[in-house]
Image (cartoon, rainbow, N blue to C red):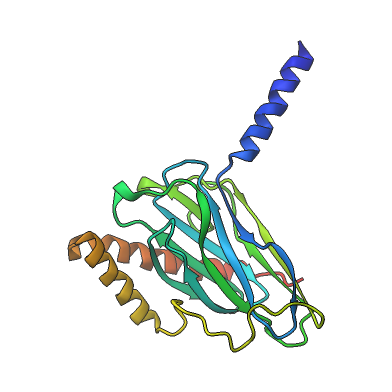
Length: 228
């Protein structure tokens, strides 16, 4: 009987691990030619839960270049909040009927070495535990966070490696060519066109952005990224 119970527990654990809600990077390891850009997809797995928003809070030793949303899963993004060692990406739906299910890339993150002599770089999703709102999140309606699992990324820079994205690679449809104000305005205008939202509908999202930004600044002062 004990063996049967143990077997059931193990199977349940395996199934639970396989269906956990998750945010991770792809590729999570790679060798890249020194001086070239690192292109990483940010992958979410909703475990068939209806997701309304995501916060992707990244601690990194690499330098942010740009973020290009895929918009296949999550239609709307605010401009990434970037500091020396942190990147905060916010994606959301504007219509409760359009919640997201499934898994896939929400966009491509472009980064580079802070110094050409750096031998490696890393990405880490800041994640305290489910339910916390100042870390990475996958949220269902009403802002309830159900994220269970996060990944990391490790990238080595070597001379004899492929260079898929040279330093002068032209990034299309990213945020870097716009100021934060222009990017935010563009996002709001797109929401208005697509969903025919009134200013009253948009205001809560703007307030959420302000609150999240203040929390992010507070967290950045409280938690520092440990370079490897």
